[in-house]
Image 1: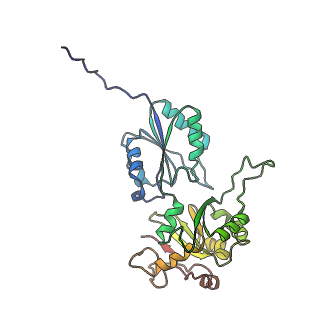
Image 2: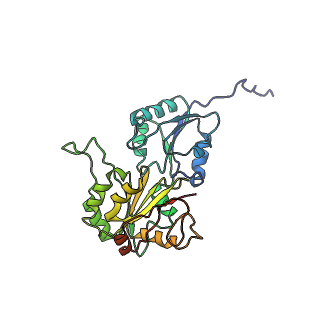
Image 3: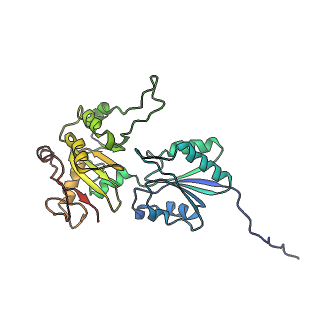
Length: 308
């Protein structure tokens, strides 16, 4: 019996695919195994601005890498253009990975992209990543929830979304006063993304429902080698950000769980990257927070800390 002659050229897979992959907060070791496999299998990667080079390095050498940066206050690739690129590449038979910092479904516009592709008849797979709001406070040795201090956590954006802002066309503003009252009554931790530029307003509004000495942590570049952080109190939030030059990308964590940073700072052998008065840091470090309010909150005069 004769055997079929193998084709002279390999068969080409003409069926494209699209996967939204969460690259995590920045540290390549926080990448999930599933995310790593997707990156390695991609033929086209559309990469966000906040994804580290060490993560992109896992891509196949023949993959086409397109940087589609999006960052508040900077020149960004239009969202409609990104969605068009994704659709075109899938229709051309490519295995597309949309690589996003953090998690695609936490302030990553993953929902918009999934809706756009599904409307075009394209199935999308989503792979979660560790979000910066979790990684940031964890890097300082404190939890987001605690049975005695926080019964829940709220992820909220500090950046107003312009566009369909209701009947009067105003931006979709966060109701900070209502959120403050809810956080106080329900013992919730607030994790604020993209809130640095609106810190003065956020501070003023949250003070209507939360005590002035509520502990606050600001973490810039969470999990990156250049991570910096400040621990202060709510009434000194804006002043601390301004004085220490903290900028985007940063997350702001508000709530009693931030007191755990002080406990971590008293155990330098376990958390060498968190500096405190009990464990003097090397290099030029600025004291953070206001002396009176920080002391009354049980928050030590935590020094300005840089990883590494």
